[in-house]
Length: 131
Image (cartoon, rainbow, N blue to C red; front, top):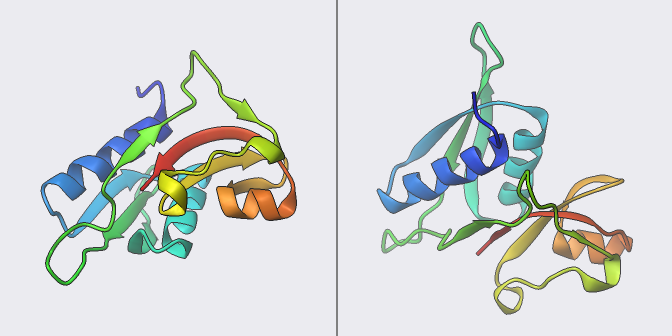
């Protein structure tokens, strides 16, 4: 049993990027699907899809690389952890790497990137930084 499934997802993606893997398979959930959707919209991954199995399903994430085989994702950091949650207001949403990266927040309006949360004027729990 995994204590923090979101941290497990981010670690699987980080490890796959380090070995230059084309795809990574992750046990699926609604929140992981939303995080993959945000990463796709922001241009950090190429694609994602749900594969059916006898359990909860598998989220297959296709990673994205530059023409010189350099990964688009250079870092992922989990911010809120089960023992320490980090909340921010809409006016204090963190900017990651001067705007190059994104932070993923869970808000009352669902999961969204830092840019979207500033535009919608909602704060929430900071899940992770991706740059």
